[in-house]
Image 1 (cartoon, rainbow, N blue to C red):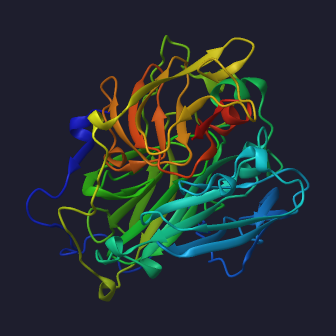
Image 2: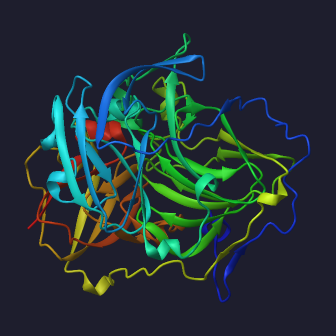
Image 3: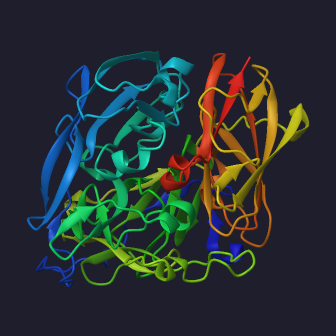
Length: 488
């Protein structure tokens, strides 16, 4: 992607207006022009218990696909947790799945014993979580984090939204209620009998990760959702094991990015496409009153390039027997069906500045660490030449220090790198790709393409203790592409 054509920063001078002044996106009959999208989107309900139970569940999806799955509180995705900054959060994780597990609150800065380190797994019974919500408002999520089996547990259904609000966000009067749509995107493999299965080959474990052939939104394949001709807020999570999405509308209609992993961006950014790697999130505003033909707005993953770093990538998923679209190809995701109820029209008036950023200055960093991402023959993907060991301290950091980490991807496949216990700012990315719109804000996961060097800056203010950082390609993580950081 060419950065000059990829994004346009909004908010130079006056406020940024999303207004449905001309209704061009609906027709009177309200009938979809697409035959592909036959299944209504399902929206996860809220958490109404102080217990989060993980248990087996045989699921029938869209009336024709079966999944030997796992669910939190009998919900797929898991129930959405909504909390306000400053509130206390207490819950009992009840593990009834028959194997070790533990919950990681992805993007949340919590004490080490609350973070879901693999050393804290339980094989059955319960684990108590009790921590203060000290996050900025944002779209966070929760999922299992046991060593070697995170991939299959997430794949089989264990994931959910954790949404935080605060005063800074509330004054913006962003779309809410039915006009706020939490969407977790995941790909799955389905056999000829309609069974969803997880059976990665050795090459998939060691190289590409597990790429599915069917795309699910909130656990539903080929979904549609009826919307009014007005502005909606979409909360997007890439909950896939390995697949990267390039979010766009087939019509190339622009949308506005307002948030990322760690909450609101400093300024809104308008774009027509947005890369989202496993573990990453994005909050976007879409005006369904203008820019779409007929009554249909089709969300797709657009084609994008994956650097070869020596020509090894190519059609790797096909060469290794993968049935799904290769990484970087184009495919459909879902359809929004726009009705003609103009009484639901609304205007979203965004100010030039959405939030106070307070990013650390580069000169405040006391250290720069090189984090080398390699493919070791007969070993797999490593971090600084090593595979994960449960209690080995790989990086030791003084509490309160600001550091720059430079991720250097020497391998032939992408690595979305996730760091626990912090939110960071992306400083630079080598090559012509440039920073993505979401990388103007706070991040906890960053995509490092083959051959790229990505520099991030962060202040380690979390409680002292042991945390991890790892690749969020879950097959890479399970194979040992993870390391410990200790705050002292």
